[in-house]
Image (cartoon, rainbow, N blue to C red):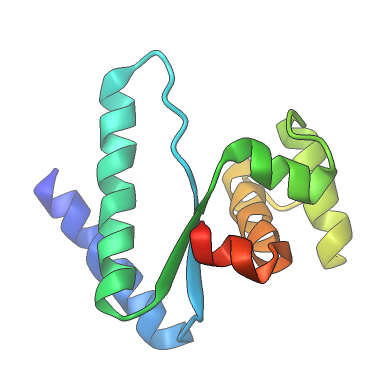
Length: 122
């Protein structure tokens, strides 16, 4: 696990150095029935947050329902709806694949559309 977290951390550091983002936006973790998965996802998110913070990049987190509300206008939209709206908003030829790519773009859209005060508190 330590090696995997280091890989995530150094990978995010490299991406930040290459792209010099103004912010890193993450979706808050969904805690399902499997606590082990939730713990692993939380550790990976921690590695991302530490990499961003150590580079001086602001971090924001959004609840899944907030992301869906911002992108689809409905906080309980399904993955297909999110993918279709990401495609429409960004003017893409196809829905981003896999679903995780569409989800990541939806979080970025949510952050870009968030009012300035909300971005500070996120």
